[in-house]
Length: 252
Image 1 (cartoon, rainbow, N blue to C red):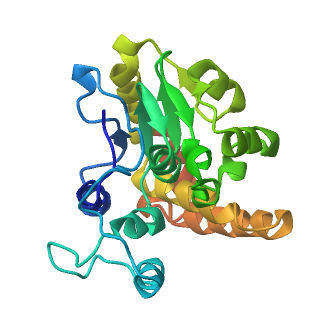
Image 2 (tube, rainbow, N blue to C red; image 1 turned 180 degrees about the vertical axis):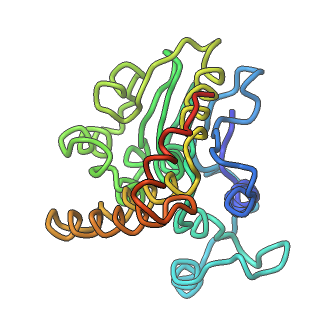
């Protein structure tokens, strides 16, 4: 079963950074290590990790305020989860969930995926409240992903949510047979990758920034972003060029 250790956070952060700067990588697919062996997506933090030292109050404050990407290969203390949760993406990622997706694993899924699919046996949840830890519903901005009542159910009960129920909540987009999970993720990735990368980048910006604005500001921001991109559409500088670019799009 996959769990998140300090090293796992660091490796994941490194992947996110490499993905952003790789010009050949247009869309990412996020799934659990050992998927072919039947391992779960992620069961959350490794709370039994004996190598995670207890922090003083001062160390907790420093871990909360400062990021760790500028440290050496081995951070003086764990904290790479801050880098993961604060990392801002500019490329789309599809999550393909099998088995358990719990706690910090679900937080990473929500923070670093845009389209989510799961096999019928997948289970989602934030069980931390059951043993006196809480707050991940804030880290994940859970109530922005699903209806407030559904977010409250997940955050306050600690109950696991089956895949079909997660789809009803719109926590995920689709439930897919397990033997087609990665195949379906690749199909969706191709649907996205066929579009001009700049257009996808602009939509990612609109989706992310628009969530932080009220309706009036979001509409104005979207209009300005659309006009700016349309006049510079993939090197085309005219109305004719814009529509010519549209006609060149092909299915892949």
